[in-house]
Length: 318
Image (tube, rainbow, N blue to C red):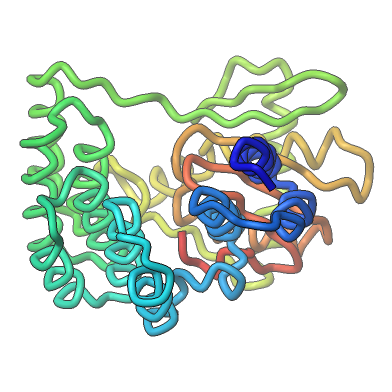
């Protein structure tokens, strides 16, 4: 197969992956006589974003598998790992809580680590509540990409989870002083041949009252199965009951509830969100999928989450 055709096939594979059609992508991939590095990357990325962890040999604590395939790139296939490959390994190590190993890898890189390396490190610190290392990673990112809102948000979230509200205020002030604006979270779902967009604490959608009413019913059923709202993901200092209300109005919950109300019985609900899904919403939608007996797919800013029977395809690593 000529290189030109390989590039064309790889482009099609990438397109299928972005549309969450891994079966078509894999069929094309398997049919390639010679597979370019970008084709491998496209398939691996697709499996990771879909949360098919065994297929991707990534995340979910598969550190040894990840190391073996990372080493094989150079030792067996003669491929020199780039920054994106190192970022994947740092991400894998940090998700497993192996910060010392991640630091060692960063120190041995044949180039200066760029933003995506430190972003992976900071995200891992946020997941594990490693405040000291998280602050160090954030400081590196402030030097490299001071206008990136994600750094401020992750650092602020870390402080909020610990109840350090004075520190949260300082981060927000720094963000304002730098002229950085946070992208507002929104989620959307297609129903009745139209896309319906929801914001957090939405009051604009014409049927939002019905959505809130249905969500209250769902929460009653979810609590019977063991669901407890995780108010650590509320990023403002307020009373406990106010926190539960605040977290119940997140945009992804509203979009999921609307899809369940409007789509045909048994149909898969597909929701898209511009930012990363929050931890409580991720847990809540697992319970919702079990209560209603339907598959729910949420495509957030990082990956596809397939919720079914109370579980998610990402195995809680995202």
